Image (tube, rainbow, N blue to C red):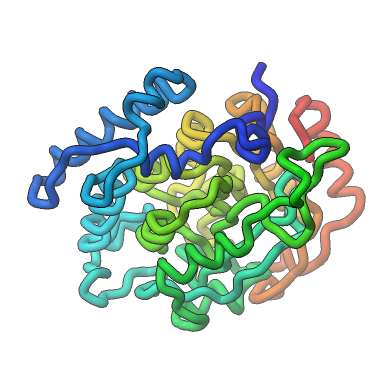
Length: 358
């Protein structure tokens, strides 16, 4: 069985390229005047070849050479498709179908991407730190217990950075100790530099087009992390294919009823489980599950069991950081802290399932 995060570590070691760089180096012959169906077929065919030959050196030398400035790439094709999706927005599964290119807002309320904060984060999972986290304002969920509610509920707050400026900041955050080219017992990354770019929020999903724009201007070989609630459409997941190296997911609920009541979303389990399967086909996966008080049987155990049965290579973080924030006090089942015994039961169940725990 493949070791968790083996390709991620290969990028850090300089032995592999981040997926987004490979997508920038694949030449695509297309015109913006072509209809949607033709462009999606081009994209589907190229992504299939991308994954079939990603480790084939002959393919790399033939198809993944540096393009001249006038050539279009697979990343350019993704940008064109993402822009079209915004004109009748179906980026996430709310499928609001508003024209965000013309200034109309959907449920998330996001228009121009607003960045609430961006900094080196040392509180993520050990393999991911230091992580250059970019927190977007706004979210497509309405979680009553959101710990980042000051960010998620105010999509118009924060600053706008041009794609070129944020790409430059990514380059500034990227670097290694001069004498080091890999992570090992003797070769370590400087704590002053990032080992990945971590797109988060709120949620990054409403800003998918902007993320692709930023990466079009980014040049450094740094892994891309998609830190999300995973409520994307299948088309959006296709656009992230060949871009994201690690999905850092939030699998909250084991059923639709709890999701509807506490996060205001429909068809949660079907959508999020589907997207986890897609993510695992595309890239490496770390699944987070925040244990909620009184939700061991209805949410924690079904989620962990599903992961064990469907994502055997994923890393799993069973989290005990729940705090009754935002509007949690309005709901009797989650208006208190998690008890030690509740977490012990949740974590013990995960261990019984032989999950790769972090």
